[in-house]
Length: 136
Image (cartoon, rainbow, N blue to C red):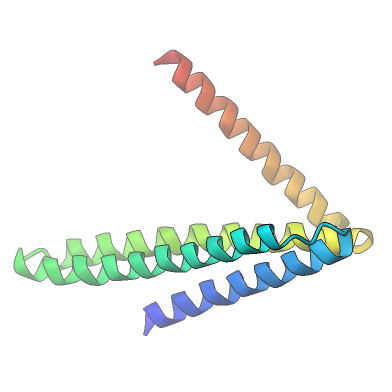
């Protein structure tokens, strides 16, 4: 049942992001069928990744029974599914907020502040990654 709930949440967020993206494109005059195709394919990809993570959890749990490692397998599978689920949920929520900020700039001041902070964190992480690469 938890897999159906996870997939339903991801599906709902993907549809919401796709629809807000279409509205944003219409409002800003940048509606493009190629962007819609790419966005739609990205959403299908997210659903495939989530379904794969759920399948991985089921498989790891089943495999753990053969090696007398039920608890370890259960934790490992759960962590894998939850990490993928969490990443997709956060990514979709940020995308929906970005779309809304473009759709309604007057009432989205708090969203812009939040997105600026998130982008600053992402830029900082990219810079740290460059420095780590240079050190190696």
